[in-house]
Length: 417
View 1 (cartoon, one colour):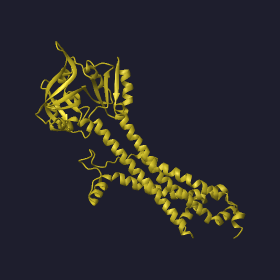
View 2 (cartoon, rainbow, N blue to C red):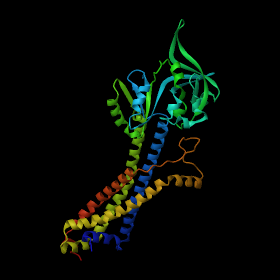
View 3 (spheres, one colour):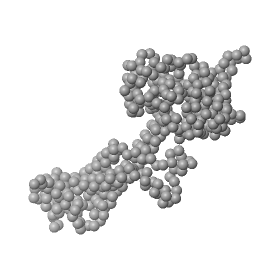
View 4 (cartoon, rainbow, N blue to C red):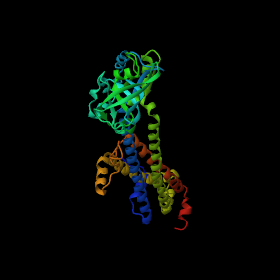
């Protein structure tokens, strides 16, 4: 039959045994609960941060492609050839040409600067979900030669227009006339409204048919601003970039979502790291409680330590006994916190609505926030990181009390017994 070393047997026995000093048991239990609560809070908050990051990334990338391929310092010509080459790449699941230019929309006395995107409706669905976000009208209403336009909901409100109304687009590319250079002006008909859930898009973006945009912004036949690409895995953009350097010849440039929204996602990542550090302090405080617990245990067990040393136990064995006792306290607390944090993170969508109904308020009112529900996305890498942190802090907390126990001299401990 397998037998544990006597260090493990004594360490576990000291945890189970009823101590004469009930205060030590209380601090030991409070340390275990503190570590559990810290681990649970950290896993839950990290999951919520991951949920918000995922939700915002999906909303942003739902309106734009993962990568955009263009020619350096000029417009992209003959996009069909590059489209056919791009579709052969195993990681590219969709591609679509577009024209992106700035313009000014006017309606009566209302004026608004916008980003105008010319698209082909039959291709655009491969790289974005704009068609799913159109709630009034239809994305298929964009037809070449009819000069229809689809506006963001907030933009339409600012211009006081709706589907069927007409407005004016002023393009910066001027037309030369005997009177000088005049801005290009075109009357457009609103054929749809979309709501992406991001104010940046809903208040400052409009869609035209690619051919209409080419005529307004003076693009030659076959020219576009760039070719948008959608990947099977958005985190493989750097690999695809390297592949395209070898695949394509010529002066091409590629811009991916990590560059277009770099500051935004870096800010979210920095906030996540700071939350990790702040909440890790809870685990650290609980771990330091283990220090005080173990110091009192060592003081309480001086006679036992002296007897062990007398019968031949080495200082390292005595040190291991008390390290095991402290580690078991920390590990049990961490396991309880891990189970509680995982359960809480996986059921946020049920717990938060219950709390809102119970107290009669909303954490994120739908009329104020675009994200009206608290999202949660559990990532096991975060769970293991938090668990590892709890284990390391617990281990460090046991070192000094265990070392102090190993330094006790039997003669000094038994002098007054």
